[in-house]
Image (cartoon, rainbow, N blue to C red):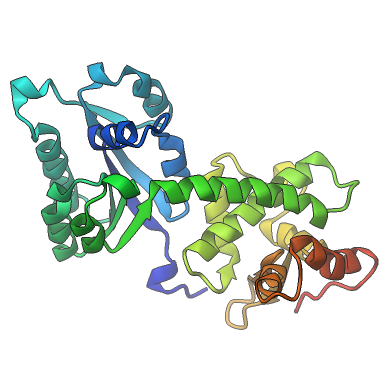
Length: 299
């Protein structure tokens, strides 16, 4: 199967300027920065190869446990009075550039900070052919840094995404038969999450290999046989039979491609004002399939 460059799995290096984020949260009176939300979004973009966070950790003891649990390397930066104001920034820049030159397979760098001081780093990484993603808070992110990145993600949007995924999990029940075993519900929920993650990355055609890779990044222990399917192809066919997705054969490779995911058509129609929401789509589309309408899979 031929997959173009934009569809290949990225290798990401993540660098977290915790002090900048912690100060931003204090200024906006938010409870706490949650690194897991960040990693759940980034894993949709590719494989996380390197994860480092910089801070005087004695000042942020509540963050050490969740960062350790996420397998992030904690880089200790002593008190500013001993090392100078920008010591964490300098160490992050040195590590990022060293990685850019020594590990050519790492093609995407994520700078988790809103500090404008990182703008020259972003420019230099781009000069070296790296794709740069920034991530920070709306109220404390420099326009200079944001506009210099290839992509920028606001932390607040991650919170909205989490709410949308919770709603998706609720809506998914309306698409599934009530007697479906719990394991199948679990795997199809992961399947839909992976498809929507790829849609967020602007993939129009979802190749089977791309979906499986995304599912494994989201849940490294994923194995379709655990859920009762002999192969990933059989899982895709089951999703099609349940109207969770429309699949077609790729004419070149003969493997499946997902062309539609449940909820997409309904959402478009609802946005146009023709339907009140996903439930109406489920009544006209999915439920009709459950009542005996044949699968629309193309061989």
